Image 1 (cartoon, rainbow, N blue to C red):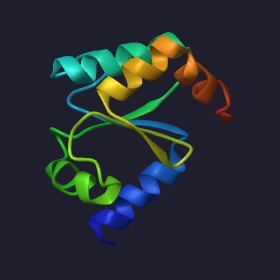
Image 2 (tube, rainbow, N blue to C red):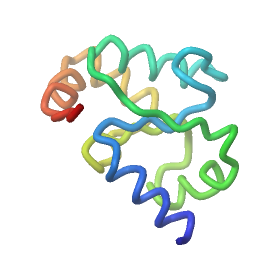
Image 3 (cartoon, rainbow, N blue to C red):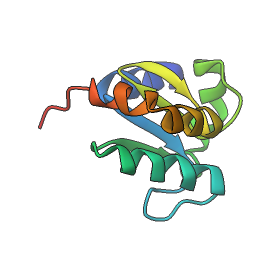
Image 4 (tube, one colour):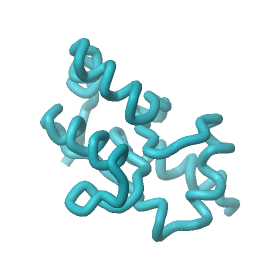
Length: 106
């Protein structure tokens, strides 16, 4: 399995997935901190991958998503965007609508 296949599998297996630096409890950059706080505020559980401890993912995710920066949020297999886009969507209420439509199975 290639790293791109692995990324595809992760994105499809996790309805809400944030690729970030660090973890929601201990983010390693301001943008990752902001993105995880916004997701926590939306009130649904989400998965995350720490790109700092996964250099293969960090190196290949921009090619997979066609998005150059981190963090990156995927919802239902689709790239939503990075920190600035999440902030804009959150302020407008659009992100909450996107998150509310996600069906999280226990």
